[in-house]
Image (cartoon, rainbow, N blue to C red; front, side, top):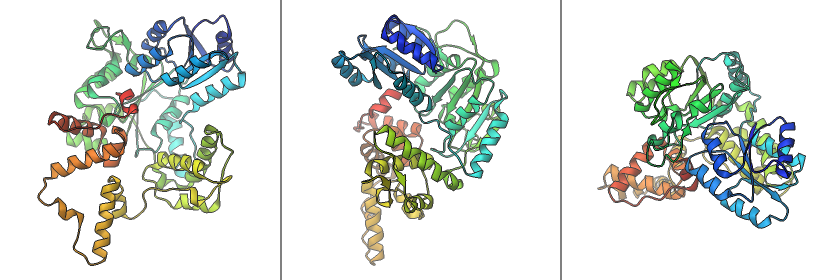
Length: 467
């Protein structure tokens, strides 16, 4: 755990730093927000920022979001700083840490940040075999390509490989290739010099340099534009990167792990993924089985999420009844572990008593293929499909599809995409998942619609931060 403290170390904030060091954290310090931003841009591998609440927390959080520095910020202050604490939380700070610091509270914060979403919970023999293979290759520096459906835990396995490798003492840096627009992804990977492009207000170290001596995860690499793939291939082969606007290349030493939810050989045949890059990444190939293929993991994962979200929400622990667990184990988890996690989180909040029973379990999706397909549509479209099915069962000829006659496929597709986006409150990532298309395809279509004068819902806050 690497912590950046912004403020003086001479008083209570320094005491918090010493407690964190005693808990195994490594410490950096900056006197003010400007110095802290410079350190963050330099790729120091910071996992957590502790900022004196009397400093300009709002500017810090806003600048980090604008420059896509995704590190949680904790505002720290003495008890009489209540108004400043409220302002810091509203500005985007993750938590408020009262000073003088409590050792147990700091330990809890460090544990929450260090284990956030990265627990490797498994019991099924199929998953055990996958983990055994991962541990066999972890000690090498060979590139690893991890395939699997969305939500199976590919990044969790990648982090496990890093922890078991000789680079465990180095940093683990993850970059989601699907969450960053193409025109910004090159800068994220390789960094840039001040003035290299509009908005480049200062030198920024890219993910390759930030991961020097450690591991770099390129998540959903199939979403990377093929033109950028050529530059990535060169960086891997030459072990050096060229910052945008830079005068000379920078040597890097990273272990590369890539993940994909697509068949990359199919993408190679389609011409959307470079064959030479595929073979460069695919030194070691792994597959994370879907939750449907490892039913033995459903119970331990459900129990883990139940404990986690009861604690997060300040609720007493809730046991899952036998009937509820049977319901979970019988379900077809199209969204895999991510869907299970959301289901249990919802059940923890909805359970009326001290147990989670079947009435608190709300499952989306099921087994029949027709229902699976209809659930990919927005609620209005799904209801229309249901009405059509009911009409057919009653021998009626009525069908909502009849109302589509005379319209072009492009028009129908546009309306479906925009309705889905509205349903998702502008969240591009969620809409793309529902529609069954890539985030890049969705963005390209939305760009075309905007150019044609069609009103497109604005991005959700999460998309604006990632973009």
